[in-house]
Image 1 (cartoon, rainbow, N blue to C red):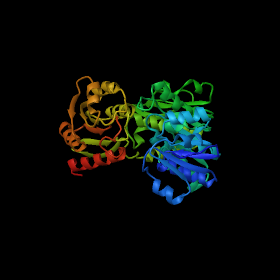
Image 2: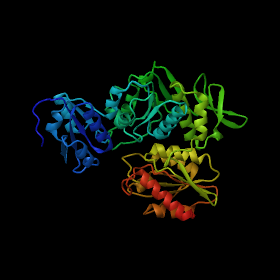
Image 3: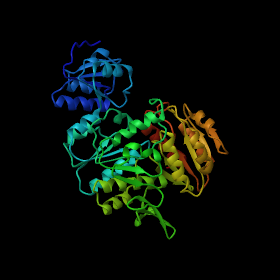
Length: 454
């Protein structure tokens, strides 16, 4: 155990990896004394850390109580819960503040921030708003929970004209100085119940994004996105219903759906390359955020027309023999899978075959039952908690068990007919069978191409 006897201006980074290493680089670059503590014996980034900063004290294999109590500030990586007993003890007994990389970033930058969170669609909306800003000629930084850690973005590019940040509930727990130009909680559904003891606790972490923000955007279709803190703030909204005033929504004119603001028709929904009602909602959220951020409407609409979507997010892999195959491996919670089922189910002529299962993170799977009964003909179950999904889904949907993803694809091909779609949207984390959700998605694409002769 490392011994420290007094507070000495020391910043202790808890949790290494990409984010932790970015924090060390940032802090060392500003002349702080830094130590690293990780519960793992050989965390990712350790070799780089020791090569770049041989003077940094490193304590591995568990949380180091003495080191934490001696800190001037604890910088916790998102994977470390602020409710870890040793962190709580250091904070309550020794008065050590607990911050994160986004907090360090927010203290540093002066450019306006578009702050985006939600249970689902964060990456799609963050990417789209970033593209809209870039296409408008703005030097924009896009990061946070998506791609490059924010402190690496700052180190590599300097301060930019605007930032579009995807922020997870874990990051928001340790962020205190965010004063976003515009903030949004896109949606709320049960997730990370292995970390939070209740839905109110999970929601409270998400709602931190509204602290000190200048303008908030809310989802009219999800009351949980408009907590009490938003009352009295300048507000914009989006939703699938017809909008009023300057709200964003959908208007049906001459039998065709249009993205609209108030009574103004902006563009036909069919002009977008990304499909499904869930992507219509994403597009409307982007328009609401972008308008507040000062982005020109024609450029935003052109960006929407050209955007083909992100990998592993309702990604169309192929269409063979009239059967469409979609990779939504990023669907790691029930809310994401619900959005995919409802969005795709309503847009195809036939029925869905859903492949689902993995590590359930303590979720309730029963909300899947009604939309599956409506839109699906079969449910192919994989992974550790596949049986829990099967038990939670009532109704007439056929249930089939598969021992591997390859077998799930083969079974799905046998169940599907022309007009149907096979959707991998697991509603679960991937680490029971795969390295991460990207690995799961890539293996799915490989299996589909093998079965379809692609």
